[in-house]
Length: 554
Image (cartoon, rainbow, N blue to C red; front, side):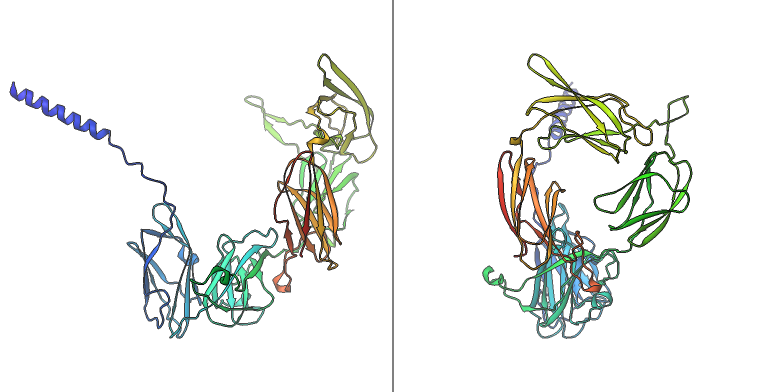
């Protein structure tokens, strides 16, 4: 009896212990660690002279990982063979394979190469320098890199420094010094010898420190840059700000060879012919039978669209000429797409309709406009029913319009409408017929009219430097162009009827007066055309005039 009682007590005690263990949870801890690793010791020390060691050991305050050290650890002057990088506990060990040059200052820049083990916090920039001679070079060059077209910071560009003066240096030679731009576009080349240098920045796709691929972005300065003596870290910021600062504008070279891409035939009688580059003059000469078509060239002058009056039944050939670039084009009849009609139905052809849309619905300063996906045939008259809901009744108005005997893909519908009122618009089916014979279903739309008080106005005073150059100014909304203007002298432009929101203004100096921004060309020693951004975004409010002054290049 006592034995059974004893066993029962033991079992109960174990159950209580197990239940208590089940309730134990991991501690929640504090806020997430966002601090990058810190260097606590270096062997040999940073700045060592008469360096003879075969390896460097860098110790951190926590365990770290390595992120592609071959690309993210930059050594100047560059070595023939990359060192070995290994992690031993909380230390990074770097072992050299090359024999180091005598009386030479070496710099190692760790750019995004070191992260802490747990959270992945990156040590964004860490510099280690040493000299195999009796002294350490203490000159420097600093600056930043911007995207030439957007003026945004250009990150992860290699900065290349050469002692020579030959223009072929970035094409054929390894640089004497190398660094890398940070997230804000800034860069620093330190512990370099005094003198004048050629400087370049390169988005080095194949990591060989040479500008040898057509799609590699490059930035350069025509004149030599002079290294200056570095100031101690304890120097006041006001004194550091007086040091020279180099700004480089990065661009991708333009492939100027014109090509005609494969044409697109999205519907019966619609053919789009896209070119790689903008053209000025275009002509098409029939090599077989001549076709009856409408021709439309888009606003950017890089795509030609043909609309046929009657569907194409046989393959024909045309000789296209875009500013002297010639192509023989075979145009084949449209093939109707097919889709599965479900079990037991086999294949069914898709019946196309003429696509018709409404533009400017409810706008105060623009009429309601029909937009056609295909040119439509002339129509003498047709009815548009307009309904407006009143408090006690529904008003109906009927407007009559016609489609002119011209190339029509848009048709304005001027109406007398009351501000701030809701309208429904209806057009019967089969009113419009495309030249390909397709028509449409019943068209309906509903909108509430705006008033003048729903819009804002921007008055921009453009001030030009009076250099005789042509400037192109652009108003943007959500990365879409609102209006472009070409200026040759200072001018005030009023932008009325702007929807409330945030806008920005850009400008560039159109050196060759071709109406578009052109990148540079290093081989021709051409810098990209200079861009200017209005320093702030512009907030447009309803029923409010905003006035700004943009001093361009001044």
